[in-house]
Image (cartoon, rainbow, N blue to C red; front, side, top):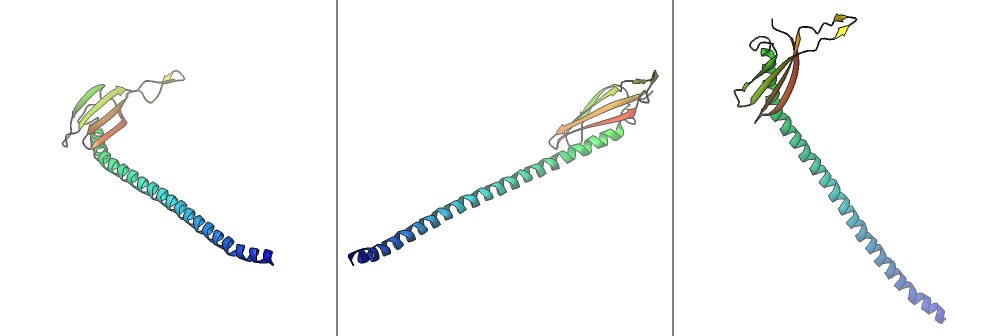
Length: 142
């Protein structure tokens, strides 16, 4: 009988220990879940700020790209398509430079290719509105 009493007396302590262990596991699980949630939120906010920075930079570069396209339209008309460099300042204060070079003549079967008489114009724009670079091909002015 004594063994019976000892076993009965031991059972409530085991239950108490089991409840403590379960409570300890719940605490650990809660801490792990909190750490995971914090990591996910940090990644989310980091991605959001990176997207905002890219959008800001794209907006700034759009102005420079527009200026480069406007300058490209003038090569061969207002700006002669002859080898050399030209530079200036746009209305918004952006600096621009156009470098014009003849395209190399490639001989195919002993005959000059259709690139003869063409020039390559590289247009660079840099300023507060961002940076842009554009390359175009035009017939050489004669």
